[in-house]
Image 1 (cartoon, each protein chain N blue to C red):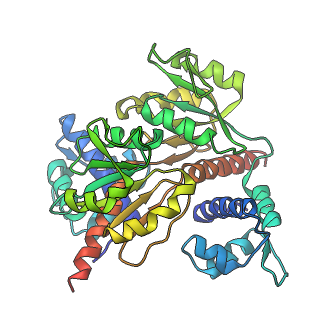
Image 2: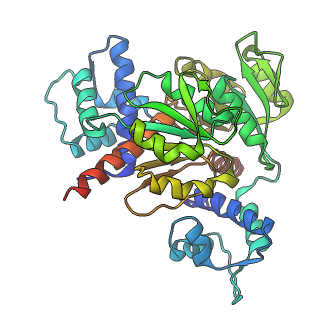
Length: 211
Length: 211
């Protein structure tokens, strides 16, 4: 059974909090404590864990290590996905550095650009290849997911190479929404939209204060 | 009436596509064309526009300039929000540069850090202040929203200064979910969660292919 998107997001967040707990020496946690860390209700936490079939009958709360491992068994692939960043401007470089510094199983292992000043260099250990070699290097390095951080105008040109290379998942930061054939997972994501959304709800809050 | 989150996101995305159309000299657009640009149905587009009270009886489709302006009247504040970035590492610098290069009404006008090597410098025109001066500078520069891009471990220390400074909206990229009192709008956002989510659905697709 495929889980709802929001559940997957929360499970990813629970796991990261659980791993923080482990580092801090906390071995057990109650659902309402985990819920409080995420600003949600204990009912929501219990519903999510019921959905993945996790049960726990201890009076001490959930065993942190066991729950983190259980979530991993649901979320993670047996073999960690190879990830490439396409577009090594400021945002691409930041994403590569930010992500690889976190000690996760998934790693960004390659980058692509069209700028001769970037091709052939390494960025925090990630080699940057010319975009013309995209299909070749995706096959050679067993890359399954791409993060797109090119300028908005270049985004459309990436669709065909991604399809042809057999990429399975796309995280698109270019601010141009991209459509792919069925079978390719896309998350279109846009910092501008997020900021405009926050600004809208701030405005609404301010208007409601006046009442 | 406050709109649902997803509607606000889509309106922000519609507007950006409409502005692209205008630049390309396109003056009218049908709902199914706008829908196709975003990988959704025309019904969804029409439902969103009905929700904000936009009606159009032309046979040529929506007037692009009028619709973009109408969406702006819904989303935007009369005075554009002042935005600050807290944490000017790679991610903070990338966000400031990326966002301010877009020619939007909202602008990032200040940055904060605790690193003496960064305080006092300008990053792409954005001055960086010491975090100890946060409340003072938020008041002086009329800042209403913050983007958080500090290391995960520093995120918790930001909650009190943000409350005390009277910030209305927070876009949190630190990967530590933060809770604020009612009245402060928070969007917790995490690149790791997005990538883990894409990876999960890629895995599910691969398993379904086997059937």
